[in-house]
Length: 128
Image (cartoon, rainbow, N blue to C red; front, side, top):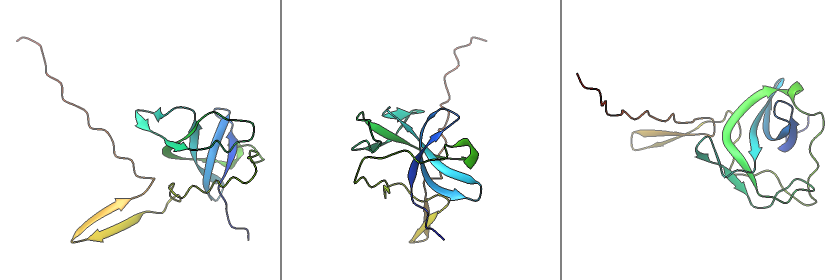
């Protein structure tokens, strides 16, 4: 059995590249790819050199992890520049949650956990 390796494919929902990090049965686990520094108000991972052949503009990978059926992706991987490694160790493998225990405090770190933003309570200016 072949070991899975990370790669880029076209995601048909938005017709843009996606960074595939893992596969689970009939689904791919992926991150969206963009040219923007932020997405949804959060910073994206910057890739120093765009690995996609024929593209030179800055490339960013959205931190939010998504899952979708393999049928919604292109059959073939996107062609990359020669000698480029797209393993990107900063991006954790899907579904792997690491628990660090230190002095009775447990912290969970994973790319699948996203802390929701708290809504700020505004002042009510209504007169009664």
